[in-house]
Image 1 (tube, one colour):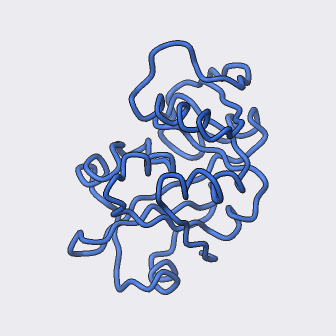
Image 2 (image 1 turned 180 degrees about the vertical axis):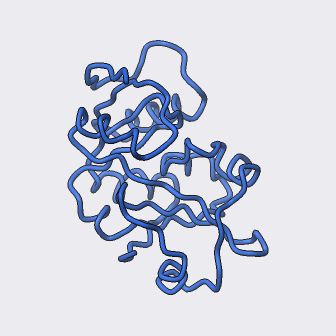
Image 3 (image 1 turned 90 degrees about the vertical axis):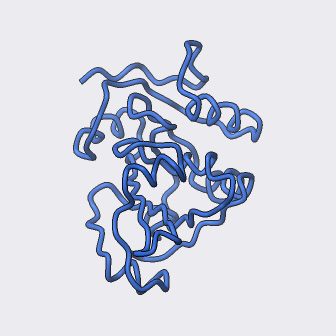
Length: 178
């Protein structure tokens, strides 16, 4: 798998809308980041090498919704942690959730399956998606994810994500042990 050297600046070439906005917001908020470009990845197992290069585990992001499709959740977990629906519902206080459809992901967050990322809350202007982060992720020093395309990954301080980035985009993370 191709993985570029580590960069500390935004790419100079044209990128997708979300990815470009992520770099703009990080710059505006004075949040330092590291990034690598890589071959397209579709599964968390493919991200291990990328995480090693960045020095931070790439986090698993799952988009969920309730049965009526009136409540949406963006859950962030350690890469190797199994997602348990029952535990999630107990911790968050909802009755039942399922994986959001590709259409719902596109409509609410502007991403397709395989490219879900916490950074997509930039597209949630109506603030309809609740961010839920596993305690293990929230307690880690570093946070790594894709910035809107599965061909690039970034690393930032978790504290900056939780205390600067998310509040800036009017989202607050619910931190629970999943």
